[in-house]
Length: 121
Image (cartoon, helix red, strand yellow):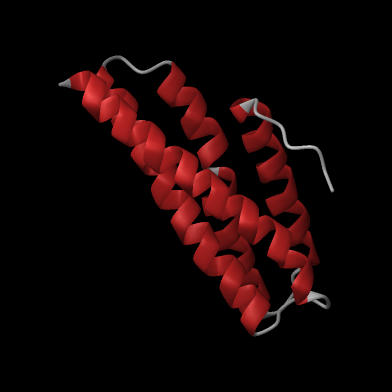
């Protein structure tokens, strides 16, 4: 089993890399290209949005950036499930690991948002 990293920035970077590798496996068809574009956008978005959150101008701005990342994770989760269900890649079971990571990252961002909202009050 892969050693779990707790450096969130590194974890988000690795997540983006994994999304890019999945996108590159999708078929060059109308459906494959559509899903690839959507997944690439939503799946790589949390990494730079986390960077923007770190440079937030206010607590409200910080929470807003975290919420954008959370929204993108949820969208990515849906695209990954669709790829697995169709299936659009040869070994759809290989997506189980990134779906687990997506769920964990969603939980981290939900908790971070709740904590930031409590501190803001």
